Length: 46
Image 1 (cartoon, rainbow, N blue to C red):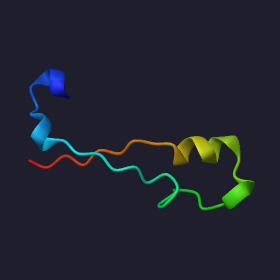
Image 2 (spheres, rainbow, N blue to C red; image 1 turned 90 degrees about the vertical axis):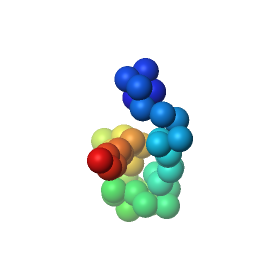
Image 3 (cartoon, rainbow, N blue to C red; image 1 turned 45 degrees about the vertical axis):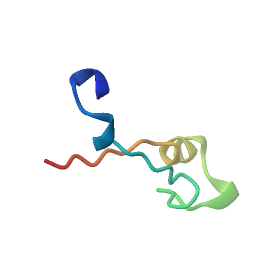
Image 4 (cartoon, rainbow, N blue to C red; image 1 turned 135 degrees about the horizontal axis):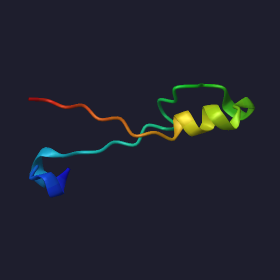
């Protein structure tokens, strides 16, 4: 994103894997569910 000219002051990140999981299955998650919980999401505001 930065290499495309977006200023670093316009970019922020927030890790939510454990606090806001897509799959809240505690220790019984499948590997696929764990992979989906380890994600990056982007919100683009114009």
